[in-house]
Length: 295
Image 1 (spheres, one colour):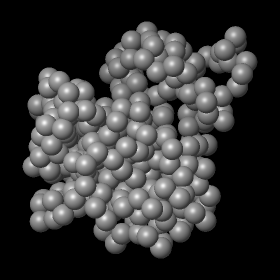
Image 2 (cartoon, helix red, strand yellow):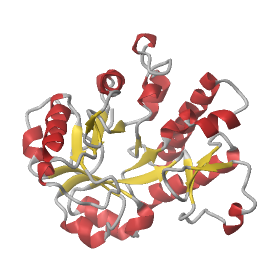
Image 3 (cartoon, one colour):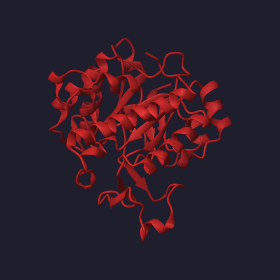
């Protein structure tokens, strides 16, 4: 398999996933429409690992849980629409009603046979609308997100101990205090997760990203705890794509260059990455080709 990692939230189905040469993929279950038998076939016959994308920090108006009346009479947990993503709404993620919705989706993911869940908008505790809505301190709000991820992990692993929990971004949660290497590793949070996903390291589109040094410090906490790191970047220029790949491999990350809409476009720089990873000190989410490594 040439491609170690695929991140595709649109236009993925059983036929395309069966034909694609990848080892691990993050997909949207509502997009793929995969049945439990199809998931089992991809895992058992082809040795592929499938992680289900789930947003825990925003509600999306195209999901099955969305109710039409919410537009005129929103539930208490529903906050402002994200101006950058139409149809996505910030949420009071500490609200029991929202947590029940997310836990139900996680239950469905486990029952369907996915290898794990890829949690998005974990950094929702930093959004202005969310900060304004929370009645406590910023430190308490941050802890609410740690507790939420830990709750999701406990729920999923009670049903399937090998089920992987992969939060995307929010690398500041990896330390005891927000983005503070000196405060030490956040051991409870690290115990709840199996790996992390990160975006936009080294590049913000085609422009250099100014946050990379601080993010790499936090990522190092996860790596020293034995967690794998899936790194996605979105440059369009080939020189930036290749530079990202080179730096990600040197840093011990599992990289993928994608288009921002995650349509499954495979840029040529992604091909042959399995061979380039060989012999490097990179923690990957596979061991026997079926289940993520448990630590």
